[in-house]
Amino acid sequence: MEVILSKDVEKIGRQGEVVQVKEGFARNFLFPNNLARPATSASLKKLEEDKKAAALLSAKVKEESIKIKDRLSQLSLTIAALTQGEEKLYGSIHPHDISEALKEEGFQIDKSKIELIEPIKSLGIYEVPVKLHPEVTAVVKLWVVKK
Image (tube, rainbow, N blue to C red; front, side):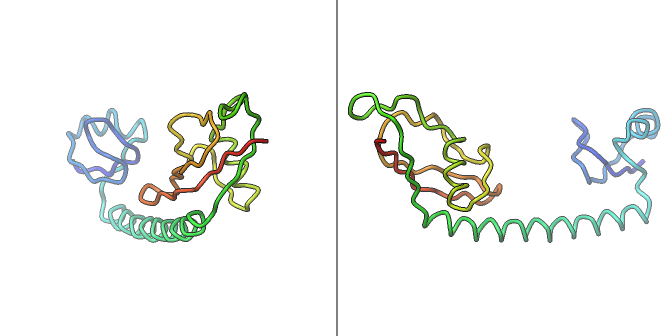
């Protein structure tokens, strides 16, 4: 029996795929748990329309991400921090702090999109990657200076 998966099902397929399963599995497990629906001609047509709409939306989001990337790559952020001695910071700079600095510059970027491997703990110039889209990553230049 052919079904269209409504959600990802482990070892069967991903959401939106048309898969062949045994009739009992579909009737007793997939349909009652709203994991799939029968693959009729109407539902297959709707699936194709949904895929086209999702592709257009994804392309639009990617285009916007590229525009933001271009603006971010020209940006140079400065964060002033208290220091302990000459170079070591009293505390550290986290993605939340960078997100707040970006907000002051007019960018609404969630801290989870800032890919800082470990917190910044000393003065200097850093290049911080910001993942705007699965295919688009911007690099922001960050200056950490003494307060």
